[in-house]
Length: 148
Image (cartoon, rainbow, N blue to C red; front, side):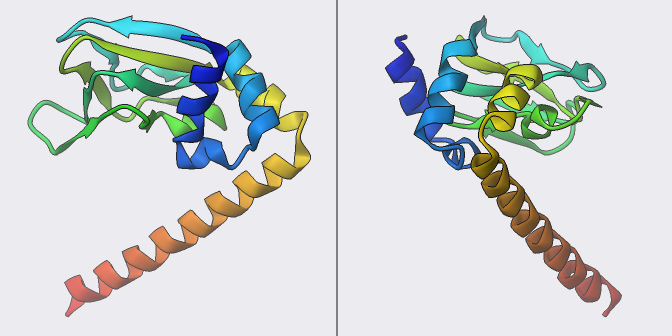
């Protein structure tokens, strides 16, 4: 894929779209492409997470364990968003449901891009704060329902 194709894909990701065109272009220049065969794990629970992935083609099942609930990641979905911001371990497995192609964004690349664009960093901070506030509200509502 060309850099323009990668920028167009990254623009489809709500979190990354906040960066703006210049920063997305910087990201697109530094990303790596990763292919995963059907049935292979992209990552597994407990592994160190130093990057996030955007699905280009294919689909992956994301679940904390084989018996628990899962979600299917499809083109344009971002996997491992928090790994872009801080060192952590993977909280889930990601298994390819079919041959899949992903863009790998390393934490170090993402942080260099953010450091070079303070306005983009502020937009990301504000978005994360709003999402965190929404999640906290939802937890309070769910807790109140369980207590009744």
